[in-house]
Amino acid sequence: MTVFYPRLRYLGTISGPEQSEYGFQLENQDKSLRLIVVTIPSFVFLSRQLLVQEAPDLCYQKLMAYLRDEPAGPAEDYISISDSDIEHYRDSHATGKSRGKTKQRQL
Image (cartoon, rainbow, N blue to C red; front, top):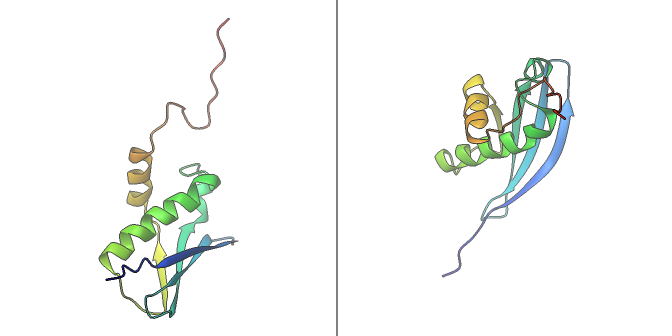
């Protein structure tokens, strides 16, 4: 028996004034393609709740959780990142650095 692992491809980002969209393409077992777009409101970046470089990883984590719950779905899906998604991401990716503040080095 052959085990099929779906192919997931990150397509890129489209930034807009209201939100940023992160596109993913999933190839199903029957070779059909599924477009999944994860959206993050722009204010999340402006308020420094999330750094731009963290967004693709957060989107990927959200997408994996979504696919566990909804393995088969429509040809096109839109998923929104919520405040609780960001909080969960923060908790699981805690760093020793405080956001927006720099420490002065003690000599």
